[in-house]
Each structure stands twice: as structure tokens, then as C-alpha cells.
Length: 185
Length: 185
Image (cartoon, rainbow over all chains, first blue to last red; front, side, top):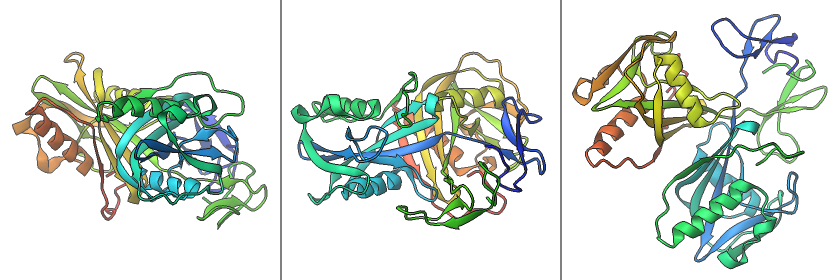
């Protein structure tokens, strides 16, 4: 950030009075521009004994498999965002069964959330950001071609919890170095 | 947003190619400026049969009672943010017992999270944003002087769940009109 989005003048990185961390503050109108973490919201879509994965058509991790997920938008709930992303990336309609996993990724200022849900029907197809979309049984999961640790962890939890038919909410902090060119975990 | 924070030129509200909603796009460098929801993170601090509340020294809801909470910062986890806010607003040290409630407030683009936790000791005091800090038994809670619905709902869940000594994670969407001058729910 170099300029004030409110008045267009330059900004300086400084600690405002009464604060304890550096913010971008406008040299002209003195507006303080806060920068805060983003939420990535997505689904773990289930059909019988299989889960739906999307092969990414975009960077980062082009060609790797992921669960449908993306940045939560203003004006929607975390669950609405998860269902919207499932539609956009996989043209899949999901009936949500509630929030299942939450991951903090403080190095990249992101909080990931996955909703567990069942496919409403077997109509699905790759959206603009996907190369292909497919259902996988546990023994078919391409573990070495998954895009992100949060995807692998959510799938591992699911297959483990499925043996008890009990799916408690799970939360974890992932703290590891940022990979080159990777802005999604 | 009127100016590009990257190059200082004017921005226009338009739907970028491949997108489906209006964004602020720079008329010069064409940077797309996304705006996304914020996370408010806080604690439900417990000591034996009492909970800690803070009386707000700031607007909105000056003088009303709340749980310690505030905007999650970059570089921290949701739990770290909850503990930080408890220290800043109540000088209270908390041992977290995990995420307890999550509320979506899509009208104001906020997601609220409260961690249940126990006070590490009985040292607490009002921080800069609090007029006073005190412990309340269930029958002492100032229900009509609580600052926000998310606080009331979290307390109601807690006292109900306490009867079973079982505190499942709870999520709710709060969809109601924005009150004048209120930027916290």
C-alpha cells in the first residue's frame, strides 16, 4: 500500500496513537488503513462412499487436486460462500451438514473453513477454475497430488471420523514456512 | 474507496473480466481491489461458576457489557487474537478450551468467533477500551445491558451447556437490519 484509497495522497507506515502495531496512515487525511486476515471457505462434498475433488486449472498448484473453496465475499455467510464456491468450481449443488474443519494459517493471513455436505445430485462439471471434477473412494484419493495440506488434513479427518459415523468440528493451526509462489496453503 | 492504493490513480466500480461482481478497479494500473469480510475474535472467560464481562469505554454501545473481543490481526491465529483481546480489554490471562461459537453477520461483513476458556488467575483490570471488568454468576448477568446479540447468545449457550457439562461447537447466522451507528453486532 502506497497511497490512501480515500484521498489519494501518500501513506506512511507508523504506529497510530493508542495502537501498538504499524499501520498504513494517510499523510493527508490521516485515515488509518487496517489490513486483516481473509477467510477461505469451501466444501467437503460427499456422495455415498466417495468425495468430490477438483483438479485446479489455475495457479498456485495448477493440475493438483483440491476441495472446492475460495475467498469469502462480503454480504454472504461462511456457509453460503462454501456452497457458492462448490457451484463455481464444480457446478455441484451441496446440502450442508455444518462446519467441519477450520485451519489458521497465520503466515499468509488466512483462515480456512470446510463445510461437510452431501451432493444433491450427480450433476457436476468443471467450472472455469477446474480442469476436471471427479468422485473418489478412499482408496482412490490421489494423496500425492493434493494441492494443499488443509485439503489432505480435512480428507484424513473425514475418512477417520467416518468409521465412527461421528464428525466433530476440528480446528488446527498450521504454522510452516511459506512456499515460493504459493498464496494458498 | 476512491483511489488506487498501489498507484494513487482513481478507481472505478466495475465487474472485471471473468468475475461476476463489482470491484474497485484502478483506472491506471488496473489493479483489482477486493474487499472481504473481517473476523472478530474473543473469549468467554470462566472462573468457577462465574464469567468475566467488560463494560465498554468506547462506541458502539459505550457503557454496555461485552465479552472481550476485537478484530483479528494479520500474523496471528484466531485463538491468539482471542487471548490478545482478553489481555487488552481485561488484562486477563486465559487458558483456552477451544472454539465455542461462530456467528456470521453478513450485513456488516463480519464473522464472530468466541473461544471458551478459564481464567489463569484472578488478576484482571479494565484495559483502555473498558470502563470496568467483573465476574458474574448466571443470576447476576446484566441481560438488558449486554452490548451485542452475539454476546447474549454465547452466554445463553454456555449456561445451558453447563448443565450437561458438554460444550459442543455452535454456529449461527444472524441476519437482521443494521442499527444506526452500530458497526459491531
